[in-house]
Length: 404
Image 1 (cartoon, one colour):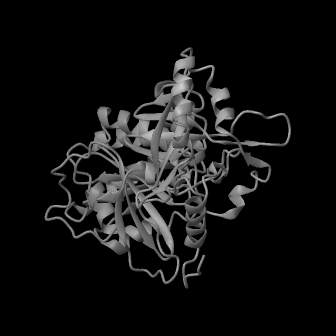
Image 2 (cartoon, helix red, strand yellow):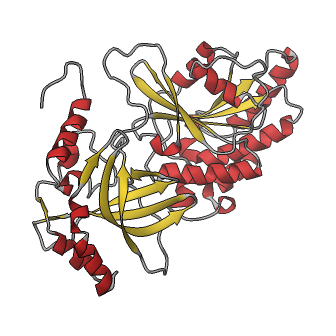
Image 3 (cartoon, one colour):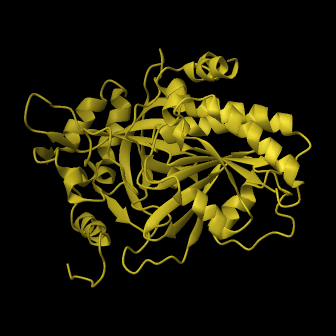
């Protein structure tokens, strides 16, 4: 394989694609099959170290795969699978991904996401393992991605297997060239499944007309709108805007307004990100000082405190927006009330900061968060403990403090 100057980490991706073009060995997809902590842009590994558990992995015959599938299919169905044996030995590399035929075992569903285990034509030779290796897959809409968290349980339902041709993406939508990055930003709008665990992920929350989208626009060099405090189109689902700044990839998650319907949507999507697994470098709550419903803004802030919990409360920044047209005395009063609210949380680290509607101001807030990443309390409660928000320890913790 010829070398390309300045290719950087993309060289290992290109090496794997060359191997796929020359062989039908599915063990190249088995990297990280024992791990719960790997991360990937797609179904090909980012680094050779991801194959550390594959030294004893070998190819198996189609007959071995069919023996595993006997418990799921009738004899007639197995005969049809045998006649289609050539499908299981075919790779097709396209500009969109790798087209491959695989048996998929349904594992569970969570909101709009479905989870599968894909049976590969390879196994581990050491020990007494005789069954093929499986890799976890998550499907969100039409997109597939590797999954390294614990999938939701199927319950008492019998797990089903379907054999079909699927398209496995081998990279994310935004892969920055690691050479020559500067302060100049590059923006791309992506879906949540394209967020990487290596990203600096910032969750941006706020009510309608709180300047939430305008704050993201300033961070991603989008031209300002005529009325930045107004949202003519309501955000219905969470998505992300990715930008590269000083060699670091940031993903700003834009969310629906923080009302009842929006909160339910946000909660489901937080669970989705937790299972990828994605941690948050920051949580931004845009607080509209010019709102006629300041009381509602404060109640929503309490909800955000519940979402963060004690462990991640230091990741929260309350960003005061649309304050330039507000009476300075009133602005000072509201900020003092918010500071008093946050002061009730011992050693929290959360604080209020003004946003003056400039990119420099927005980046000062984001860069002040640092590089630490944490999981929100609401995510752990929904995924690990499988309990509703009203019963979470985060809500109990905040409620007790606010009553002091």
